[in-house]
Image: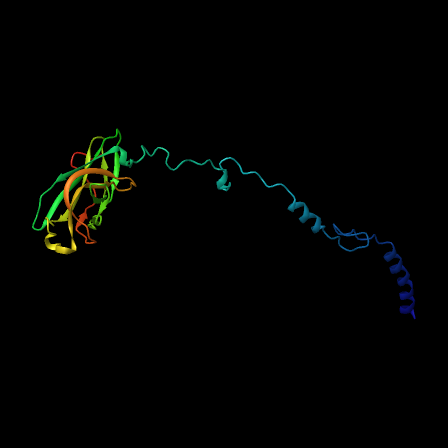
Length: 226
């Protein structure tokens, strides 16, 4: 009986103390109802997506390559390479060369009459003309030798070697397939040109479709290098 009475006295005292306790402070960011507040991430992402880009600092290697000044690749490269020789600036001559067994050789000489160095590369076009200025037979075929660029200084010269079958007056080794006539000269077109120069030169020529002339690529004369 004494223990029960003691409990009855203590219980009201505990209840009264509980009612007098102060409420616990809400956690930072918590709502008034006790739940944690949410961060407005949607608005934050929108603000970041519309922000202006940061300008690159002077000398920043991450700057766009297009912002760097462009320089010419040819700047300071020196003088330009010589241009191809123009037909009108070349004097063309045909010079008798050495003859071998069954062949005759002539040199087609190109003299640069301009005031600047120019170039020729490859074999010229050469064919025989009759008295009326018409082509006789086939043009000379290239020999197929290695090609180099001939740089010709002003008033210098370069040449190509024309080799023809010694057809004589009866066709020589080509016989009736040649059907020779007397030619009145050569038409010579420098490599890279579309015009030809006429050079008077008495020469027998084949009227048929036989290959009877071959022409080498142009090479510069010694001392005429540009």
